[in-house]
Structure formats: C-alpha cells, structure tokens
Amino acid sequence: MGPGSSRARNDRHGDVSTGTSTAVTIDSHFPHVSVLLEEAVQALGPRPGGMYIDGTLGAGGHATRVLELSAPDGRLLGLDADPQALDIARARLAPFDDRAVLAHSNYRYLRDVAAEHGFVPADGVLLDLGLSSMQLDLWDRGFSFRRDEPLDMRFDPTSGASAADAIEEMSEEELANVIYEYGEEHASRRIARAIKRSREPVRTSGQLADIVAGAMGGSRGRIHPATRTFQALRILVNDELGALRDGLRAAVDVLRPGGRLAVISFHSLEDRIVKQFLRDESTDCICPPRQPVCTCGHTPALRLPSRKAGKPERDEAQANRRSRSARLRAAEKL
Ligand SMILES: C[S@@+](CC[C@H](N)C(=O)[O-])C[C@H]1O[C@@H](n2cnc3c(N)ncnc32)[C@H](O)[C@@H]1O
Image (cartoon, rainbow, N blue to C red; front, side, top):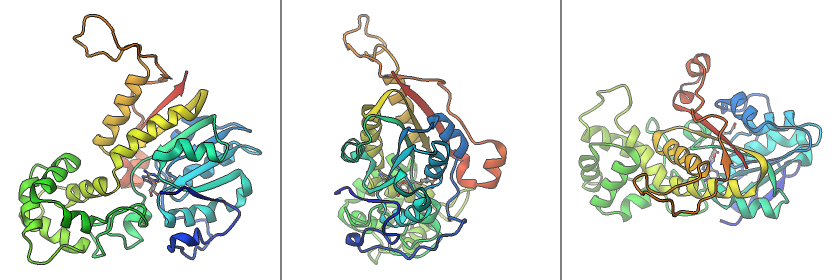
C-alpha cells in the first residue's frame, strides 16, 4: 500500500484516489469510544514540543488527547489502513491544524512513513489494535455477524482479498486451520466443512453467520457461535498478527532513547505477541531457557515500567463492553 498523506486541516473528505470518501459531519459525538484513553495516553507521557505517532488512528480519540496534552506545539502523525476511518479522524483533528499529519498506511510500514514525514526520532508510539466500533456497527463492510452485508472485512478495501474471496480460494483444510489458529475455535473442522460444502458461495456476513450457527447447533454459550470464526477471518484477511510483529519492531526503531511505546490489545493472540516481544526486548539474553551458556549476543532495547498489563476499571468495562478484554502494555526505549 502506498502511504498517501494529508494535513488534518486539508480536505475533510479524504483521499479521492481511494474512491471511498465519506461526507463527515463534525460534531462532538464521534461514533467510537476510545478504550483505556487516559491510561494509554499517560503511558506515552505527552509534553509540549513532543512528536507522537498513532499507528491506529481510528476516530482519533487517543490522538486528540495526545495533541491536547502536548499543546501548544506537540505534533502527531496518525496512520490508518482504513480510508473511511481517516475521513472521520481528519474532521476531528482539523482544529489542531498542521500539528496533526495523517497518512493512509498500514502501521507495519510505520518506519518509512515516519521518516517520510520527519517523525524520527519519535517521543511516543501508540497502537490500539483491531477494529473500531465504526467498522463493526456503522459501515457495511461485513465485520459483524449481526448484520447481513457483503463479506469484505478488509481494513483497507483498496488492497488484498476480501473475506469472501479468501474463503473461496482456500481448501476446506486450510480454512479449518485458519479458524482453529486465529479463532481458537475447537469446532473448526465442522465449521469449515459446512462453509465449503454450502450450496451457495458465501458472499455475505449473514450467510456466514447462519452457516456457522447451523454447524455449531445454534447458540449455547454467552457469545454468538460465529464470534470466533469472524475473528479468524478478519485476522487472516488483514494479516493482523504479521502486521503487529512488523509494527512493534518498527515502533522500537523510530523511538528516541526515553521514548515510549503503548499497545492496547483485545484478544489473547495479540496480547501474547506483545507480551513476548516486550519481554524479549527488555532482557539481556533470549537463548532457549535450557541452554547452559548464552550465545545470543542480544542487547535489550526497552525498559518495562511494569510487567503487568493494564486493564479497564470496572466503570469503563460496564460502560463499554468492547473494553472488557482490553490489555495495555507499555515500554520505554533505552
Ligand atoms: C481500535 S481502532 C482505534 C481507535 C482509536 N484509538 C480512537 O481512539 O479512536 C483501530 C483502528 O486501527 C486500524 N488498523 C487496524 N490494523 C491496522 C494496521 N495494521 N495498520 C493501520 N491501521 C490499522 C483500523 O482500521 C481501526 O481504524
């Protein structure tokens, strides 16, 4: 994906080259509630004159707070793979004029995008992973099993294959492996068989939700039977775990010594990668535990203020269901 960019004060209707511009009404109610807002922003420690990168801009909630706390001259580079999200953020960040710079890019390319816009070395990098409630609830992109929409699921609809195409291209066994690995779904084989043997090609989220529910024998637990299958396909289509590994490495590279990294994850697959990365990057030796003598020559790049992940307070978890599984991990570059 080519990292196109624009200043927040410019065109409110987005990058016309993407063909996905949305008319955005600026009001104070942006349809995404930022999770662990104060905690994540505090972890970055914004200050006047600082340079910050938000790799997952979304509706710009965290970005707004970083810009407020780094006034009058702190700057923020915001990336999002989703041109529709960028339209929303551009409108929200317009009051900050050229203190906010926006780029349409996957955060796995953060190193290049940050260099291109003069944001290296940066004082802080934030990654708030996954999808926003706008993608889930407002736009017809097939992320939700509660609605019947074209089964797309790409954060960036201008690049890569949709979920419907991915399903068509995979064998039954490959699909089962994806559902098992990325959805941690034990009924993966049964679900993959039902999907691949369905009479009609699966082109909508409603069709997929019905097939999965049928294969699972209806709803039993507290979560919808298609929850894990939808998560698996979304992770696959967006190569979310690969992007996370690349993005963490790039974030450490662009930080100045003393600069901070904060990552909010929403499920165990993400949190495991973040936790492992931070652990490796903050220890002297990453040799296998049973190896008697160190041969890795590893040098730590990070210091961890705490090994424990931050979680939402009870009030936040009650007010915003999406926040319940959120985990915040932070680190400082050495
Ligand atoms: C949870 S939302 C961020 C919300 C934001 N922090 C706020 O306060 O409004 C995640 C956003 O990250 C974007 N995203 C997910 N993976 C991405 C990636 N690899 N590169 C760039 N953007 C990504 C999604 O499109 C979505 O808009």
